[in-house]
Amino acid sequence: MNPPLPPPLPPSAVTATAVNAVPDPTTLLGRLLRTPQSLVAADDDSVPPRLFALGLVGTLVYGLVLASFSMGPHWWAPPLKASLGLMVALLLCAPSLFVFASLSGARMRGRDVLVLLAGLHGLASLLLLSLAPVAWVFSQSTQSPGFIGALHWIFWLVAAGFGLRLVGRGLRLLGANASGGFGVWAILFLLVCFQMATSVRPLLADSEQLLPAGKKSFLAHWGDVMGEQTPAQ
Image (cartoon, rainbow, N blue to C red; front, side):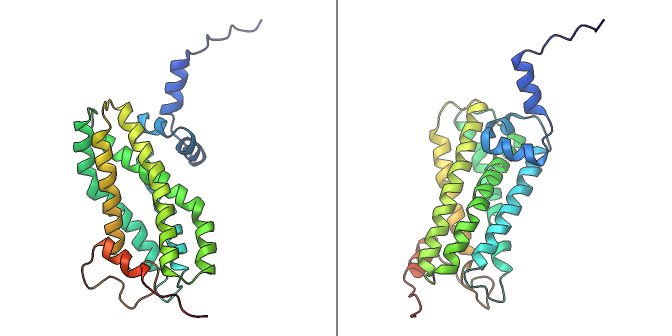
């Protein structure tokens, strides 16, 4: 006689078990794409470092695509600049995320800020990684720095948009009852990213100087890049 089967778990218990399970890399990618809010709600200390590691890999690979536009002797610099620049931008924006999220009603802790930024980093970098082949094709088929620079920024805005949506959903899970504070922070984060990319220029053109000698706003830098002439064929 077979022993009786244990009663099935209620749906809430199954959901909690799935959310709090330690994710392997494949499961982590699936949850990041399908249910990113589950990673924010998960009480698992292994999630943030895995997401940051995913983000680091994604930005390094995408940085190689940036370097492929000129492919000079300093081809290794754009991947390092892209990955470190994004990490610094996240670090600089961490305190303001805590303040604006708290003003919106979210019950924030330091760990919550870390999880939200890790989710933003991981998801945005994963999307950039998926767009890298398309960016590479254009990098090899055009000589216009203005066009290719604008294309990279469009790809970054798309990737950052999905990452910021993850942060917004996470804040609602943490009790945020207003979106105004998050909207201000999202604009601030994008501005910091724009200026950080300008501060570590050049990212496309190869130069003997690995870092710029003078100060320049990202608006002035974009104006200079868009005004550059495409070499005659």
